[in-house]
Amino acid sequence: MSKITYRTILVIGDNHQEIAKKYSSDTKVAPYIFMKFDDAEKERKNHIRLYKTLLTDKRVSLTESQYDFYKEMYLTFSNISDFDYFRKVTDGCMYDENTGDALTEENPNAFYKYERCQQHRLEVTGSEGDFSDPFILKDGTKSYSAHYNDIDWSLIHNNEQKRELNKRVWELIVENDEPLNEQEENTKKRLCERISYFINNFKSKEDFINYSSSLWFWGVATDKKYEEVDYKVSDMDWCVNFFDKYIKPLEKTNPLITIYEVHCL
Image (cartoon, rainbow, N blue to C red; front, side):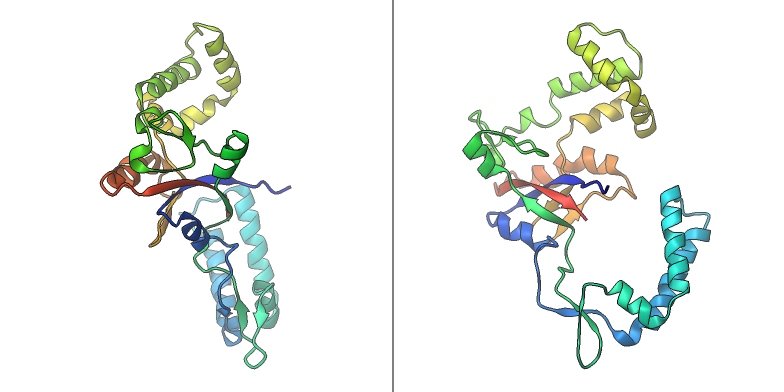
């Protein structure tokens, strides 16, 4: 069974619905050439060369499932005709009656799908989203969409309460401190079997505190571009620097900021 992965992104701008749709695979565009029929031979050879490199280059680190997948694709593309390759990789496309080229309406700028903001749900039912927490505003209310200067950032980003809580989590799990109360006992029981997560992902207690106390989102969408975390580089840098890089500079212009839940492609 496939596992749907939902993430939260930050959409900056008054026209947040239009911006969110701009980078969604649910948005269809005018038909364009996905692959030319005459390029099938060249593209098949490129694919074979790519998979062979992934399988044989010792600098490439693959999981067992990734290796099996690339091996299967390498064997498949090595043993089919250019025509069969073309039809396989263009499955679901339309075809030009004159040239045979594959056409698609898929959004070439898509990064996610099923984008949704839970503001309406919050207003109507009072319940929050399944995969996202709303902003806390300076008047004490909550909202998934608000202007920068209306949000109480001190309550949701890197405050002393969060830092102290995450400090204790590290001490309980990694340093094996004795719980001081029932809440700490429950925390230790719940997380003790996940000690490898702490050890494998963080070099120090301070790294864990900074990471876990910081406000960050999977991606940032504006009318001009979309950026998201790149796990091939470092999600640590993305997370701990997110506020200073993407949110703090908005203080002067005070734009509307909206939280969306999305399904990663």
